Length: 185
Image (cartoon, rainbow, N blue to C red):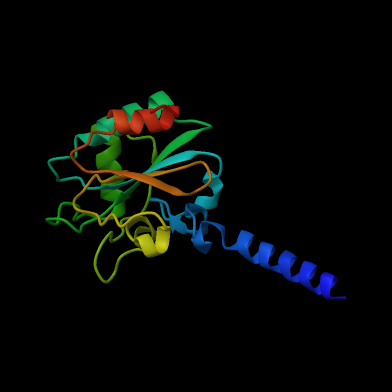
């Protein structure tokens, strides 16, 4: 009887341990958002893909990175990799327009075909829940990485886990990002 009780306790402890793997932290797949066209978008639809999440702005010194992001997307995008852009007006009011204007700007000036989302806040009291997860170790289980400026890039693996960040001045085709996409060091 004691052996059965001990065995049952060990099994229960093992199940509890497995369920808390990754610290019980959320993944990218726990979030939903809206596309720039106001359509619901469940991020769990990206399962199996590496995802580069970027906060964007149309009137920023880094705005030409839209072209680099599009080039990266055309080169590597598909079944294993994608990019999602989140316009934000948190830095120097460099994204003041509404979503429809942002979409026209990105398409007309940079030929953006990767998925753009609705404008959100990436810092402060009104920070979007996805960005709380991206920027806070207590949420992502890996690292604090507050958004410092427009075009900060977050790398999410095929299982929806946070794996790295590239700062605004790091171009989308930098070695850090390309090697991560390719799975090389």
